[in-house]
Image (cartoon, rainbow over all chains, first blue to last red):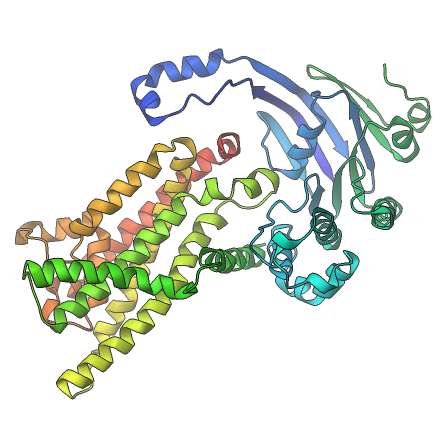
Length: 242
Length: 265
């Protein structure tokens, strides 16, 4: 369950961060003034939202209206300017995969590092190690340093690790279909399996037809903090970008 | 949740240790070679050329001092960069950010343990060869040794959290800390006992807990250099209080800044 209460998120339109120790000490008083004078970009304002378990929550809207910001707020990598966000359940973000990958480490070591950062526990990874590599179709390269992996292999491993992180809430920025044709099919199948198994899915997409098919709720972001929430079945069917 | 964080800390610290010596010919041996080479420089300058102090007792105590100092310097330098260096993870995944300064401490602690083992081997073999006896170690003094290591680790933990936060906002701390470490070698009784008047001695130990920890770590092995302050319980309590206070203070700073850290990485 995800609950947003009166959430406001502003970004500051920095040209560059003005903070150096020298600057800070000399202009101690002015820093606040300066910091207040920077133009703020409104992404969300007084935003209240409720996502239930099993919802397929789709976010649509133009670039720069805050789709990813909402995803990041749910993943808790950024904090709201004001307001409260409650997230109950383990979040597995499919936003960027393999963020902790290190080229010098072997496939197994990277699996442990990424898996544990995604919230799996050590024993679980150890037991499922072979399965993870099998799913990624790279069982021959378990002990190969990551720098010798092809980019497709890297993506497949990253995807497979995230797949094995048993979560309650999944966040997708478009359906991540990585690798060759067969593997892409696997990715898409995984996505639909999630939807069928009643997991909570946050799905950001530009594909309106797909959204209309699967969504139980649609959030349409219009920029400058304006939004429209559609949670009626009939309205979702007739939904159109205006 | 706590168990998972402990697992994260252990995995990250072990892999960081591996990464540190990845691809180098001597590997983990470097963690011993570096203090050894530093020791050779200090000993040849201050012991052999300036004749400050010679003899194998001095050499061994200098060596132990360098090992402890190396642990401190390495751990804090890693801790200083623990947020910036892991920016990729912190900005993309939700993790408790405190695991990074803590794993920086652990990474250095592993190599410190290896170094201590080597020190023990050297210590006992030199004593057996030169004195033909196995040196006796007082059990109470040995407890000072462990307390000293605990004290220095707490100090590093507090500093790591504080430095990691500050360095995120002001990259100047990279330069500042380098200077502190350069001066620190001479402000801590590693190479020679500092000429501090008797009445300011305790004050000095409060200002520089590292100096006190170092004396405590040395005490079971070198009767000659033992200080009487380590027998005072009140000083021990205050030293621990200072380090714990530093940790609490840096946690307050961290809690105050933690929401902003991502924006500055």
